[in-house]
Amino acid sequence: MKPRRRSPAVVAFGGGHGLFAALSALRYLTTRLTAVVTVADDGGSSGRLREEFDILPPGDLRMALAALCGDDEVGQLWADVLQSRFTGAGPLAGHAIGNLLIAGLWQKLPDPVAGLDMVGELLRIRGRVLPMAAVPLTIEADVFGSDPRRPDELSVLRGQATVAKTSGDVRAVRLVPANPPARPEAVAAVLAADHLVLGPGSWFTSVIPHLLVPELCEAVVSSPAQRILTMNLVPADETLGFPPSRHLEVLADHCPKLRLDVVIVDPTFAVDDPPLERYARSLGARLVVENVRMRDGTPRHDPHRLAAVYAELMNR
Image (cartoon, rainbow, N blue to C red; front, side, top):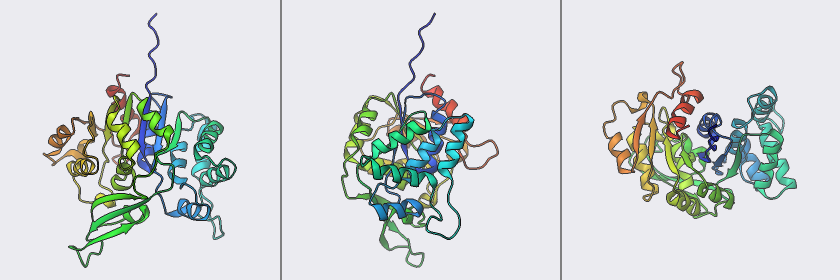
């Protein structure tokens, strides 16, 4: 009888819907799965809770927890509850129930990771969810043409919600405070991983910020793990007009030491971008062009298709 193959240790980086997509695929392949999540959201329910209680913004952490809930009826009910929002016009209107649950636990357990672990145990999630940094962060961006009337003017935009929606040409992003401390649990997970998965997600506000946390960036760069980059299906507002090769270029601009092993891109996004393969090779990566879009053609990653690509790369 052949010995059972050990489940791979996988760390996925990102935030919001992009990380949700990656986790929804990876959860089919392993239970040794860690989500390392951006903590710079300043909009909506997260922004309100962050400002009122001086806590990490819980929204992206909540979405990662929901992605890792079980497939059974109870697990899916919990996922729905976490994502549900209060309606109406009262003080709770717009708040996600999961955000309030996390914020409430943080009132009792000042260590955010302890609170997230407790939520994970309550929900019986498949994996672990960690913040990328120990403090709430703010994103600043240098942007040309944020005012359409002045397309050649460089301005500084502040805040994830603002940067994510800009129609200007984002040239660079940075974190405030600069050089924030990483959560040691996140660094330890990276160093123990067999595979690291970056993206998909909002490029400047969900993917690149992980590489601006020095300890986390150094762990990613020095890790012997396979490094996989999952490209978006279409440019988001903040990367409107960017071909895939430009996404790789700005990633390298923000972390010159970064080397990748694989870049995954859907053929509908890779079309008409001849420099893409050259840019991938410049980062040490081979380009994998596979259908990972939903079968109905909508610009969302199909978790089963994406899982199949990840499984092939991880030799599952």
